[in-house]
Length: 384
Image (cartoon, rainbow, N blue to C red; front, top):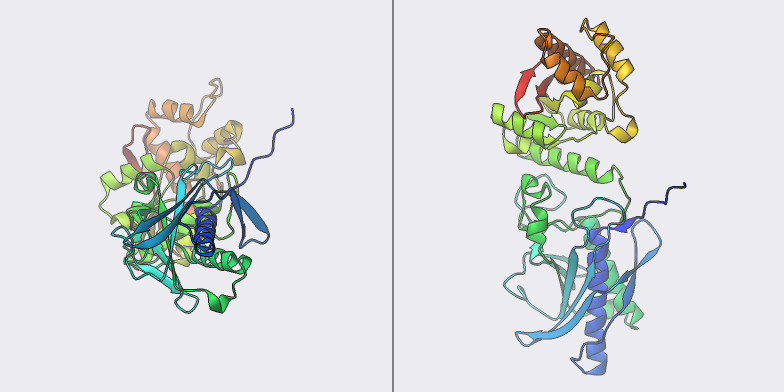
């Protein structure tokens, strides 16, 4: 049976730009027709940074008055395609208003200015605020990255041009981006670790979310290291997962900013740590991932190859770790459980960590690497 092709989706930045364009179209409609009755906008088309255009269904439109100002509101529902994105289904909202001072309402946050200070982008409810240095946006500003900011401005300008205006005719305009339940969604992300408080980030460099792509992971790894470096951390802790991270945190007393969830991207994370010139690297993982690292595996996700148990047995044998040939194992965890029950467990675990350390230090040279093995009960077994 032929597998169906995975669907791509759109970034929060693209959704914010589409909502902003629809909101400005509402304002222009109200102005041109001298009315505050809300028309329904089915969809808008915006230009993407990656090239080409994309159409977005508009979820909601509304014209209202706030403090005697006409406010146009439009939203889109983020579709992430087949990517396991926690922001999938989030409502990305834009409110636009002419000739306004700031704040428009109590929920609005610091604005970005552009187009001769005519177009102002404001962070609303559900959009996080940057509280730590090292990210593309300065401390104190809303977590709307530079490319999405430009997408929003370009889409606003498009709305005016399509309505027959020239760029020099664009009046002072404020666009407030907000996200319904953004603070709840952000709790499922690494935003709090990065110092992004109060909501999600408006992200995206291409406008497109590719299903199961490495871009989100690697971008987050880099962002975490940027924050760690800017916070003065000299040691970075790379963890394969939440359990190994928590175990390391419990055992050692490093700053929260020093912890980076590398997931399966061991080679990328080590290379990135070297670029950031950290003085020491700690690597924390459970047995299966540590074993893959020890066997010089640059990408440890199962889709890049399940662990070869025959090669694993040969590898362990070469380390003088005895695995009876008559025993059959289906998983790396079963090997761990067997070794754990024997008198050679300490030796075996240490040898695997030593091999993982050697491989890691070849990549991160000259930075020293300490490998910490974590049990499946969430406790540190040893560090090498």
